[in-house]
Amino acid sequence: MDGKMDYDKINEFWELENMGINSRENINLEMQILEKFEENTTYTNGRYETKLLWKDDQSQLNNNYEIAKKRLFNLNDKFKRDKNLYLNYKEIIQQQLKDGIVEYANCEPNNTCPGYFMPHHAVIREQKETTKVRICFDASSKSKGQVSLNDLLYSGPNLNPELLRIVLKFRIGKIAMRADIQCALLEIGKKGK
Image (cartoon, rainbow, N blue to C red; front, side, top):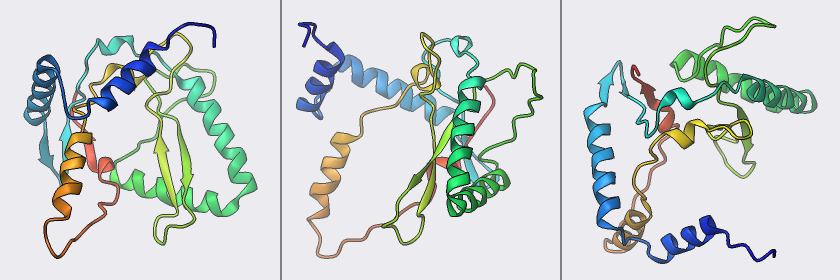
C-alpha cells in the first residue's frame, strides 16, 4: 500500500456500518427525489413511464458510440463461438424491440452518432430453470475523464434498511409467499426529457 487512503472505500464501509441510520440532510434529499419521481410517473399503454431524474446538467453526457460499438464487436466474437447464446440473445433483443424497451440506433458508417449509447452483455445463469440468459445494460459506460449516465442520475434511496425489515417480517407468519417479477425495471419507459 502506498500510504494513501481510499476515501470512497472508507465511506462505503461507514455507510454499511450505519445501515439504516441516515443524516437528516440525506433523508430530505431522498424524500425530494421520491416526490419528483411520483410527480413524473404515469401509467400509459400498460406500462409505467417516468422522466429521468437528473442531478447534474445532462449536456455533460458525452457521446460514447465508439465504446458501445467496440463492446458490441466483442459480444459478436462471443456469438461466433456460442451459437446457442447468439440465438437466445437475438430472441431477447427482438422481444425488447417489440416491447419498446430498446430501439434501433440509425447510424450510418463514418458519420457521427449523437447521443448516449448503453453497451450491453449477456449474463448467463446455467442453474436457472427459466431465464438462463439475461441482457445487462451498462449505464456506467464512459470514456476516460468523462461522466456516465449513472453519474448524472439520482440513484434513489438506499433500500438495504427496508430489506432488513422485510426479512424480519418474513418470519412472523406461518405461510410465506414469494414472486419473481420478470423484467420489472425494463417495464418502465422513458417519458419526455
